[in-house]
Length: 233
Image (cartoon, rainbow, N blue to C red; front, side, top):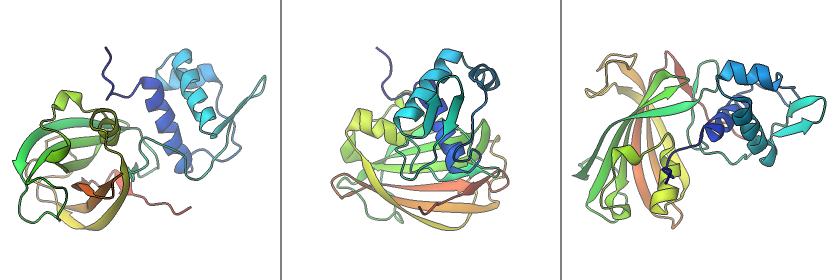
C-alpha cells in the first residue's frame, strides 16, 4: 500500500505551479509553454504533467483550450497543500521539499507558548529546500495528544498533509511573528548560513479544527536565498 502521507509527483508539480502563479511568475491570461517542452524542462513525463495541469484546471487556475494551449487563470484563495508555507525564493516561488533531521518526543521545554493538553510534544527538526536549495530550518513542536509516536519515515514534504491523512488534524489558522534570530547549533553543514549567524526567525502558533492550539514552531530563514511573503487578497 502506498504511503498516504507522501505527495504524488503530479501534486508536487501542481503545487509548484500554484506557488509560481501566486508569486507573479506566471500572469493571469498567460499561455504556458507547449506540454512537451514544459515536461522536458521539469524532467517529468508528459502524462505526469497533464495530471498536474488537470489538477490546476479543477482548482480553477488553468483554462485548457483545445488546439490553442493552456492559459493561466490566477485567483485568490486557491486551495493549496502549501497554503501556510510562506517562504519563497528571492525570485519567487520554488517547490518545497523537506529533509527530516530528527523526530523526538520530549517534555515541553520552558519558553514555548502554551499549547495542547499534554505535557509532552513531538519535536520535529527539518531542513526545507526550495527547488533543491536549502532555505529554511524548522523546529516544530506538535502536542503529543495527537499521536503516541511519530516516525521520521512517515513524514512527507507537507507536514500539514501528514497531520490530515494520519492524525485527523486540520490546521485551520496560524499566527506568525517575525524577529531577528541566530542560526541554531543543530543546523546541518549544507544550510547556507553558519551556526550562530543572524537570520530571520518566524515563530508560529497553529490552531486545529477544534479551535485549540495544536503546535508551535520556529523557522530560521536564510535571507540570502529566500524571503518570507504574506499576500493580502
